[in-house]
Picture 1 (cartoon, rainbow, N blue to C red):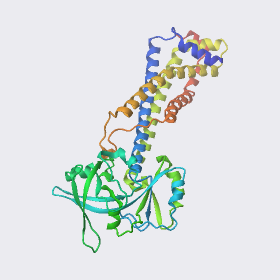
Picture 2: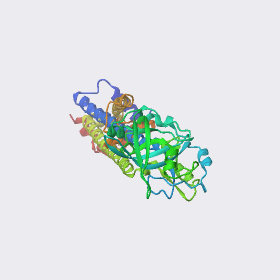
Picture 3: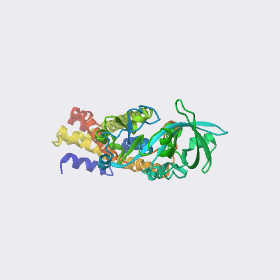
Picture 4: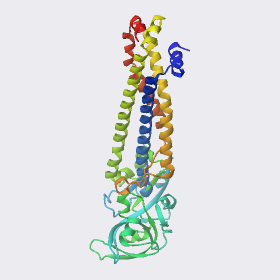
Length: 409
């Protein structure tokens, strides 16, 4: 075993090498490392968890990627999807595509004696992924659509239900307005209430049968307004988007879930800046404390440094010894920091103790994402950067004279 590592381990694990000052300094160093690890882990886990949770909610409601007609533009009244160049079979065969579902949307107004609400009626077909939507249901279910005839069952959001004082099995009249035509009235039965925590969705969307939307939009029974494409992983959206674009035809366009609500996307992007800023601050605090520990240990062991130099140890060997010694001191802080940090994250993951206002944060509880690579990278990164930061202050050892050091008291 090399001398610096051997000697640093000997003094680190010796029971007689720590006076009261050493104990205090070592405790402060370990505490700063532990706090740095805890704060960094919580920041990364909640930051990445929030980004992932919001993206998944957006995608699970309306598809990771949506295909619409270019004639629809930004209107919620979808135009007929052009079939020329559209290859749904090849889209389904893409390895990352989990499922697809067709839809037609149209705007309307729900009203009763209590209130009224502007809505977007999303007509779904028999390929609707009710299992994926189930996570949003608070009560009831989603319409069972066979596309034969008209299904008058709908699922509304909790926000709309509260505004109109509605509950499951209640009926509601909806008015659909068309240019240069008389208003169309439809009476629906509420069979389910959902909540996504995404305000822009909960304020507007109602789930119902596709034939109602087709009738209002003057579409034929085989025409659709768009396709929701669900991927196996929300992080594959950017990768698969170009492949899907090639299969939709030039009269249609594809849109990512993260692009449908730009204000939410802009809000999500702030997480990256905040995560980086907090980790940098924690890293600076840890490095400053560890450098302080090293300098005090050097001053405290001036006699030992002089003796080692007298016995023939080089400055580089002694510097390596003290750097190794300081890094060994950090290890308990790393272990305790990871244990406490991961413990707090797991408690939040399974029990959801910390709540949020979904109107501001788009989720009702603080979500966490346990990424093993990120967890290991934080500890390894802090250890490596601290080791590199200790190189410059360790040059103080080369300034110590052996004769004066031995006399130093």
